Image (cartoon, rainbow, N blue to C red; front, side, top):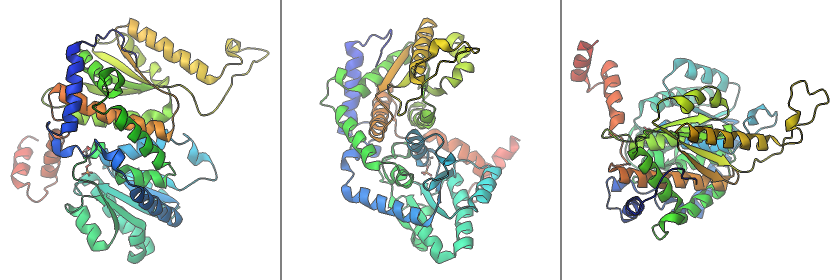
Length: 435
Ligand code: PA5
């Protein structure tokens, strides 16, 4: 990691290590949600085998699996699936079971279009909600449950639906028990945005053909690399959290996560949720934004170079692509590109990355670089745990509880009042006065 322009004082090093120790001791704020800290190393062979066999069963029945969930019950699976798949896998005529996502919005057209398209496939559903009461996935599940029962009958529908939810609470748990669905439990002490390495992420990923064992092995490696016995300079999560903290205190209020690999775009989305929901509270916190490069150099690039100087960037840099594509010489050279002849595209991409970094640093935007050798299941597993651990450390350094999300309730209260949900009668009257 490059730490351009940032002085890592003894004070900030100690603060980062203290925060890391607090995660380990379980004495900090939100300590009932620390189940993710040793989650990777606690995943058993039996759990992985069970997930793989459920995935195989769903794949044998369906060529389209609809994953219903929102926030932490959705973004992790999508991020990992997209990172580890060809960007165009569904263009191949021969392809594995397709995965699509629903329950992450309330758009009528989105659900309509998905319902219509899904009728061309044999379908199964994975429905994920820790609380079991979140409106978006609950609405989508009601619609797809009815659809599947209509198409296959109630008995077969039961074989095509898997629910992932709380062990005892919530409407989804009640419904699943009543209907007899196969269910997986989201541990009480793992919050949604830290749950990608539970069945929440692992089951959809196994369906998508991702090597979940390698993913977990990578996370275990990073669990060890960020443990409290590691000195500050050898603990990447502590270093990242400390650098962010210094930059934040120096007025850099926005962090932009960027990558030059488009298939990491949903890693950005997952990261934004992890950091935004964990840190944005009590009037504090770095605002997490993202760019996909080089595309966004032609849109956000101008602002980053010359807009308000409240930004810093973290570039997720991939050293080696999976495949080789060379630029050939052209005898006419009408496009003037022969200076690139014989080069691999990745060399051009790397020089773009370096050139942008230098330009942005010159423009007053500090740049951090997180470098990974290649995009593999093991590396993505490492990355996930790295970001989670750093987020916990960073949240404690900020003096907030990184494991709650009280602010998410405000919109729900208004929405339920406007929709006349039973129990919201007073709120309904109040809110209507404002309209
Ligand atoms: O991180 C979180 O806790 C949230 O983003 C939740 O994952 C999200 O609100 C979905 O909640 P649930 O899984 O209860 O439906």
